[in-house]
Length: 267
Image: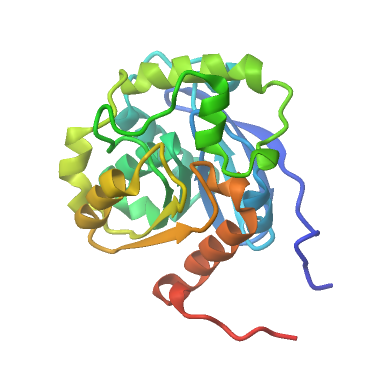
């Protein structure tokens, strides 16, 4: 039977022991492996990821300290998390794979591609953190204003009963790794080392990581990069415009540089 968008595979919780400690993750889907790195909100099965899981096996690790998981004492920076994810790919995936990353996860993914280029085949960065000028963009403290900057379509914000309980702990965990910095100068200087073909994805209503600030640095720094926009989306593109994100990211993962070429519809 031919798969449709409604034949989404169930995601199951798993745990793997790595050198720094245990890592919990969600795994689901069918096809070539994709490592999905979450935002500060933590791992959430977005409609876009569920659609991508039709043709890809998605691995969604929880960074230590997020969603109530224990922190690993030896992990203190975003670069450390990148090393952890390199080990995760080696042991959980078993070979190099594509990487899709949101915001905070994009910062990790950039370091992963810099330090472990042999493990990253193609890279998708959705409004990644780590390269924003201090005082430009960012998330406001007011919850209503914060949600407005995250979701251009408020009704598409995830309905998670644990969200309010978990989010403060996740923000604290993120601060522990970033130290409150918004512009990683060492990472910025290392961008030319990235070998992976890279899709830079920003919502047309992005205000958290403004494309004229962050996108400019990424596009000029990463040798093989393509800048694309998701119309009608703010920061959380996977929730705001899941169909558009899944279609564009899926085309990129499957066809590489030819993702910009329209394919004929099959009846």
